[in-house]
Amino acid sequence: MAPTVSSVFESERDPVRYAHTVSEAGRILPSASRWNSIALDFKFTPNSSTAYESIPSQYPKSVDYNLVITNRKHFHCFIIVLVTIIFAILATVLLVHFLPQKHKHQGSSINLKLAINQALTFYDAQKSGHYPRNSPVKFRGDSGLQDGNSAKANLTGGFYDSGNNIKFTFTTAYTMTLLSWTVVEYQSKYADIGELDHVRDIIRWGSDYLLKVFIPPNSEAGANLALYSQVGSTISINNEPNDVSCWQRPEDMKYERPVSICDGSASDLAGEIVAALSAASMVFKEDKDYSRRLVQSAESLYEAITNEKSTKQGTYTMVDACGKQSRMLYNSTSYKDELAWGATWLFLATENTDYLANATAIFSSAKRDESSADKGIVSWNNKLNAVEVLLTGIRFFRDPGFPHEDVLKLSSNSTDILMCYYLFNKYYSRTPGGLIILKQDNEPLLQYAATASFLSKLYSDYLDHLKMSGASCKTDEFSVEMLRDFSTSQVNYILGQNPMKMSYLVGYGDKFPVQVHHRSASIPWNKQYSNCEDGKKWLNSKDPNPQVLLGAMVGGPDTNDKFMDQRTNQKFTEPNIASNAGLVAALIALQDPPNSRDIKNSLWGWT
Image 1 (cartoon, one colour):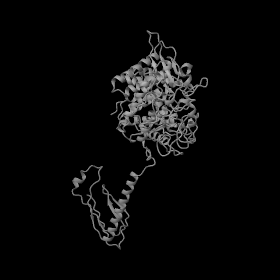
Image 2: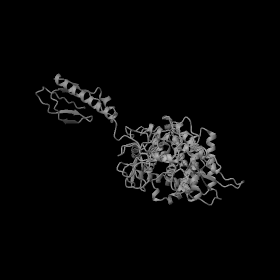
Image 3: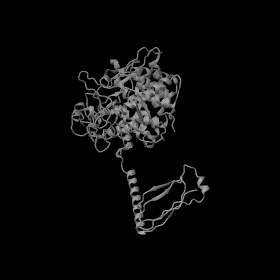
């Protein structure tokens, strides 16, 4: 039989000694009460014992109570206090929800959409050739229209590499590959923020140029493969002006611009071009003719550098005629990573498993030869870590199985280790302000932090799509949230959340570099010719640049977070197209809400 408890508080003068509650099991639980101003009559009155007992055990049983008020004044005070407390709680909840949060993934002052637009606009300022009249950059015009003439080739177009007027094929190809990768991973994001046409225009401009920089071998004519690695000069001969010694707008160039030519032994250069054309073919898959032209050119070039008759493989900067001019700025230290990079993108573009077999074999060999200096680095000179992330994606979302599984498992394990390198300070240190230091040899730090940010966010998306909360490497474990926090921290640092309180993306925020090491931005756009001698006063001027080089990511601070905004100190203030590609990649990766599962991905077929 169910128990009945009755407790009556006789008057305000009679303190309440005990109140009793009835548990659903029928046990009486004593609890002290001091509400002596309210009299309560508790009666356990279930409507039906049968109905009561039929309720599932995990749900609470219904109990009716009778409430008797003996002092209305005290009761009204009680209600007022209760309502006040409820409103205070609601106000606190609303304030917590709407006020900026210190630890949000995207800081309250960070506008990723704006940063993406600006970072892409930098490429509009770097265009060479017949300059588009609809460009958002108004201090540029036609330039380099004679490029290639000295080699009897048409090498107009492409991009100037940095603050100088040189065009490097190696970094252009890397830039196009990385930008194309972001589009096939995050096309819907670009579309959502209105930047898809913008980034496609940049990739097409670069791809059109890359189609010009090689001539396939012709066995009938006895012609070997030819690759054009560079337009412009870094070395002065007889004190003649060149693209380094002369501080001059590209529109005013009149000095000779030599062309560096390579043969099939430039395996790294060819592999990078293969990767760029293959990745771009996926960006333009709706334009079937153009896409087919890109991928067929990539296949033709890959065959030329990997066929059995080719006995020489190496880096393009090993041979003077090919890379002597590039050596002091972009010295390539390996070729296997580019060959694996090119083969991987060819597989993704064609689904031909022969390319995957080549990619996994070369990757496995390259991992054995990997130097400690390359661990954790993704840049124009090292794509091995990027290859392992792509191969991990292939393992996760394409699952080709035997005979590739062992190497693909190696790639996913290597990717987990790479993420640990980024996340745990015992592997790589940070500046006092939190920027990861992936290279200690006095190189600009931001370029490496940007690609680390991109890959960590990208991998978090892979894990999230698989509904995995994290992964591990050796003795360390990490979560999706940790990857996203790291990625965000590096981008936020670049965009101004650093000890200098300076955005290293020119034009973004209230404080950014104003003496950017860049010829076009530092010389007034007055349509008057300016020679090399005229340019010296602008190079050495202490005034801000007359033009804002919108969206250029400069070299950035040193390992102590110190930055020198000096045009003549290019380590700090010079931008380049390869570094900016890493920043674009990180920005677009972070553009979505942190826990979104609605990312549309054309590379892996997510919907």
